[in-house]
Amino acid sequence: MSVGIGVLGTGGIATRVAGSIEAAEGARVAAILSRDHARAAGMATAHAAATPYVSLDRLLADPAVDAVYVATPNALHAEQAIAALAAGKHVLVEKPMALDVEAAEAMVAAAATAGRVLAVGFHLRFHPAHGALREMVAGGELGEPTLVQGVFGAFAGADRSLWQFDPHWRATAA
Image (cartoon, rainbow, N blue to C red; front, side):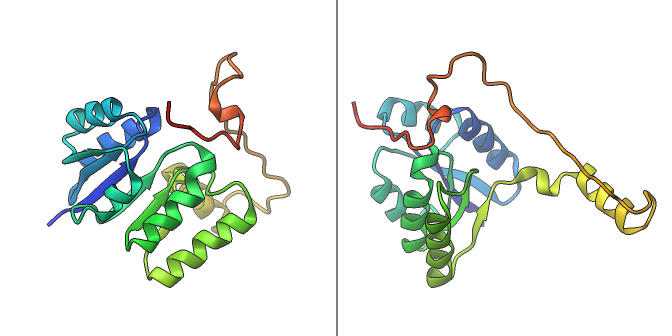
């Protein structure tokens, strides 16, 4: 038996993660959600998802969906994760988890109430290089650390009109 994952969103990260779900043993893409049916249908076909959806409620009611991956614009994360948890689905939400502490706490409370797993996609937390570094520090191989700095970024280009630069951006149906 495999775990059916509903992918919320059809952007670049959602597409990459859908491919990883397909490659994972014991998991399958069960559904795709987009506000644009053509995009949902195209991604569903490309990733062998059972059903494309434009309605979150309908996706959450699908018994083939055991868990959801939330990869929609940031302002939708809390609302969609809470709805999924209330529907009895496990949730992996892309970062940032929410726009503020109150929304993040509401998500955690919804997971506890539903008895479901809520996780945030901080993939670098489990990166092998970071694990090795932790072991080196714990083992004393590096001496006593006095300062640790890290920098991580992604190229966004010069176009600052993208939704990623507005944390409160919400898609509306055209």
